[in-house]
Image (cartoon, rainbow, N blue to C red):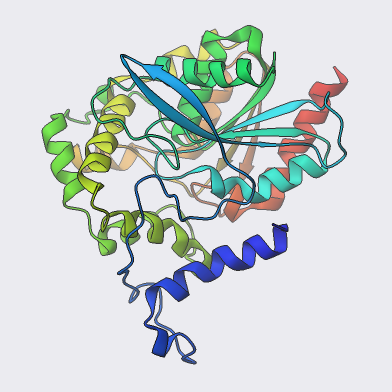
Length: 352
């Protein structure tokens, strides 16, 4: 599928699925705040289009076989020796949202690997395993081994930034460069007054989700909500309607516990690879802010202008790029700033 056609089809998905056939051509479709969904989406997102072919890596976790989805997109210039870039998604996201970044990288001569981690996107959603960044990093290393990739530039957004930090600290010989885009976990939430919750309570939170709650939270990621962002509501809202949603909810609760219980901020001094941070300055994302009793402490959480500077100091070789008037996802909300910084940094590494 051509990039232009994919963008058109992805943007049209919401409008078509949300409206009865008799209204699909109405001149005034409902706004995103009014939109509801009636067509279920399986928890493996089988019907949801990705911009490039999706393959699956079999993984044995415990005594069960699971499948990890990924895209392996070659450089548009061809050649088997193109340098590789790994894109790691956030908790409330999936590989498809990297489509513009994939396009930019492949047209700059890079091979791009985009996994959906176990528990996310088109990958398996086991609800009976212990999720950990050790596990996700090991799965990612196994994928690189299967693809014959020795070292790679690692890009991580949000929760993917936590995974990228842990991967770089655990497998320094595999990490050529590290790029962090508004990663969560730049502060230890446990030490910032965020109270723990039982997994059972987190499961109930997930089971109690609604389209309205999902949309309200997703809107906090952006400085200005655009119709094209509705896809970040459509997918989880339609999964709510799936017969397998309870399993999805349990898996999502377990990965929330992973984020809370396994901070990676303390691993920053262990990272040896050259690093780039691209930080949206309007972002205030913080896991568990609603579980902080003290209002003053609650307001200090997720201060990305401060967290970005502190993280750059904690890393031994880091460059910080601040994206003004940008929220949690610079590669979508400030794509020119993000991709310029990313490609410049990658080329500097290629020349070293």
